[in-house]
Length: 214
Ligand code: 5GP
Image (cartoon, rainbow, N blue to C red; front, top):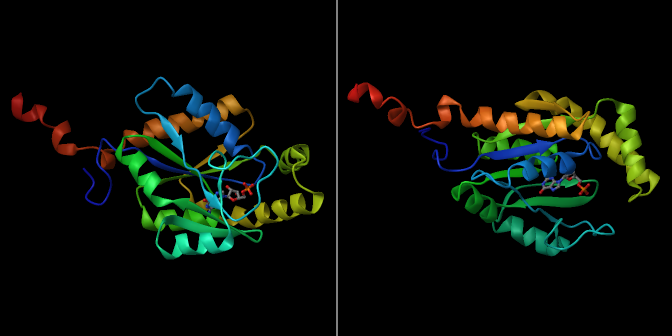
């Protein structure tokens, strides 16, 4: 077993980043749907944010919507595994919930931006960092425009952030091109399977026990 990492029975902590509009949520949904029958189910972390809900977004389903003051006290009390500002709003991952799910053996996915991802990398070196990219820049533009949930200026700002975030790509472990949701979901699940097979995540003693018996 890894000295610093979680035990073999615990789940994988998985970060999925990528430009706004790339389809992180859709791909994670598809991967989760394929694992509903499995003992290794995937859970998605629900973040805390100070931004206002978009139409159709629900408290406790998409986000926990909090005031700036409430967010600041959570951060101060160390209740967030990571937190960052994105276009004037704060976003963070509740630590306790994530740790409980991991301990129960669930793989936990955090869909977070790059600054938060870098904090996770530091604090949890065993986390798996995945960056999702669109097949092309034009495709991303089209997807953001199709979302229609935000005014044009906000879409432009999000594209600008996406351009800036790209330089962080080499700090990630894996990249997934989201050209087709089903294919991207298969790649995500393949990454999780491979990560679980890593020697560094396994209890080596137990794996080589047959030597003693044979
Ligand atoms: P949106 O406003 O579109 O829901 O999210 C904006 C950005 O914040 C996205 O890149 C999203 O992945 C990221 N985000 C959502 N939750 C968190 C979080 O808990 N922490 C961090 N660092 N980023 C988050």
